[in-house]
Amino acid sequence: MTSDIDIARAAALRPIREIAAGVGLGLADIEPQGHHIAKLSAGALQALADRPRGRLVLVTAINPTPAGEGKTTTTIGLGDALNRIGRKAVIALREPSLGPVFGRKGGATGGGQSQVVPMERINLHFTGDFHAITSAHNLLAALIDNALHYRLPTATGLPLDARHVTWRRVLDMNDRALRQIATGMGAGNAPARETGFDITVASEVMAILCLADDLADLQARLARIRIGRDEAGTPVTAGDIGAAGAMTALLVDAMLPNLVQSIGGSPALIHGGPFANIAHGCNSVVATRAALALGEFTVTEAGFGADLGAEKFCNIKCRSAGLAPSVAVVVATVRALKYHGGAALADLGRDDSAVLTAGLANLTRHVENMARFGIPVVVALNAFTTDSAAEQAAVIAHCRDVLGVPAHLCRHWADGAAGAEDLARSVAALADAGSADFRFLYPDAMPLADKLRTVAREIYRASDIALTAAAVRQLAAFEKQGFGTLPVCMAKTPYSFTADESIRGATSGHLLPIREVRLSAGAGFVVALCGDINTMPGLPKAPAANHIGVDAAGNITGLD
Image: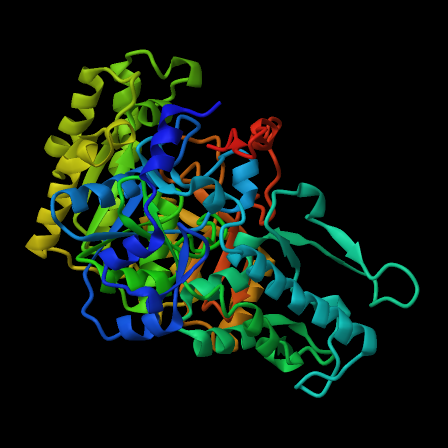
């Protein structure tokens, strides 16, 4: 069944050339992918590089809950609202992954009157960027197995050692059956070995594309990817087996940001999509820089809660790209705060001041954490119809009187830009005041283990980290090989400040277990796998895919 919102959304879509013209882009600056989607041309990106940059607004959130927070919806609503009050804004988002679209989460294009459109195309194949990333990643895997089959010498002079190949394959789907597999079975194939699949958004190729400055930087980063060791134990890279050029060729179009629009008519650049729980969780540097050149404000988001996405946005993306946010928006809901306070899902619509007060500790922690980066904070309280006015007022009062930050009740899901005007005015005022004093959480020169410990203690409020013996050896090897100055990327459950997703709220004094560390030499960070985090998610018992279909007219149904 088509809803009233669906009808209004379809009627409001403008030709993409009009959206481009609204930010000063001509027909030569875009490569249309149909009537309502375009890629920015390489020439446009070059021209934009010389323009002054606007202000960067980071939207983040409390730890996600089954109750929902609406971070992407708020990002879109804020962008629309800034444009409504006359402050030229461009929205910059990540592309949705098919894994969560068909899994637990569903689509990732916002909701209600604060969506980017065309929603169905964006959530599914879009412009094929993720397919290109998957192909480039798996091309490297195929070249590795070919080198093993023929025992080809690498640039080190020796063949790869099949026992020490670390490069896995990827698929943009939640498929737990592929976590561990055996390849090379049967006569005449590459040597039989154990390997597995990760989800595409966990691929280092995805991270590289999102952090690369341009095609030359992309190819250089791809060449630095560590794939394993040769038979003498020397590290081998993708460049050592001649893979980087072909991989780059597959990614030429994928490097170009995608231009779409919101229901409210705001321009939106949607590009790249690493997960924040297993990668760095931000859209591409190329798209962010383009957005900053096209508008007075760029409104972007970081994945999951501020303990993961925002921390990595600051310590990894901003460090790599020379960016500095002017304002951070922390999104919360009364429902989610009550869940963090201990309420059951079935009871979230019931007034309970005690559990709400307890849940405010989670919001407090995230606001305090953003202040550690020197970024002024605004809280966006996303309104739900089940909230009481007293509960909403209690959250706003807590932000004002206890945390000392502005907070605004937002109704952009129902009312579009008008529902986020107060938030937009507050964000613009803070940006105009220029009070941001952006800083990183740790210096480049700090040892890797101490960087991990700093994030655990300062952001998660852990007492310490617990490294396995293997992780200690890996960190020592990375530092000996010259990678000690890289930032760290925590792979951890997004649902808790701990490594245990069942622990809600804002616990402290826990020990953070780190079982393994991995070097992403091309992306430029070291990944720490915490607890039982997995780089290939599985589908839930009742996946969203069960409710998605196509009607007789060819319209996709059930995709939220």
